[in-house]
Image 1 (cartoon, helix red, strand yellow):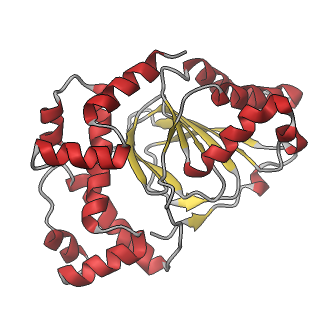
Image 2 (image 1 turned 90 degrees about the horizontal axis):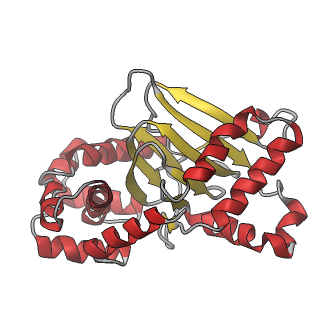
Amino acid sequence: MRAAFEEISSKKGNASFVAYDLKVPAFPFKWHYHPEYELTLITRGSGKRLVGDSYEPFAAGDLVLIGPNLPHTWTSDRPLRGGSTAVVIQFSESFAGDFLHWPEAAGVAALLEGSAAGLHFPARASRALAELVTALPARTGMARVTALLEILGGLSRLRSMPLASAWFDAARGSKETERRINKVCQHIQKASARPLPLAEAAALLHLSPSAFCRFFKRVTGKTFSDYLNDVRTGHACSLLTGTDKSIAEIAFATGFESLTYFNRVFRKKKGLSPREYRARMQELGKEG
């Protein structure tokens, strides 16, 4: 799907980077990119996070570092009374300048390099840093700059999970193509927990199944079934880390037709079995 360009530099004013509190009734589906790095902390709200070709659920405490020109969006499940809130920090590649070449900054340099795919930091492990992120928009002068450097240094010492796959292609299409593919992707998000036939998705665009498959693969770089499995796997990750449901219960709750198929797809997508993934996330959550 085609990502929209977002212009950031004019928001800086006389500052070297952008940091602000965001409050909206619900996070809208706004698939976009920009040349700046972005660190986003969700402080209230839940829904789905899309970064490159990664699709995962998010909730309060979600902390993600996104590299330059990587398409992304957070979209809420539903509006919340009192609104959904986040802290957003955006800075250019030139912000740190020669600092990144210092031996003391090797960890931060590696962190920023890794953010090309997007990096997710488990909420429990990053709780102390989240407090620094939340306080940053109110800071002024040099305290503002040193706080950001402290945050980046802290993130460089935490384990993180890459989001987009190494082969993600951010190729852009027309606005009409973007509208059509967004319609399909949003339908997949809503219907992924039940059987979702190819013909049903094709009918959304008034295409035959074969024509729809060609269109979907050309625009997203993935087959319909592969993308659907990405969505289902993302939902499964949320249930594995946020509930005590059994592996079998999660498999069927996320739309997979058999436990064997679920295990095979999950390992292919995440490099771990569902059981191993749950254990690893529990281990990461104990850090910090």
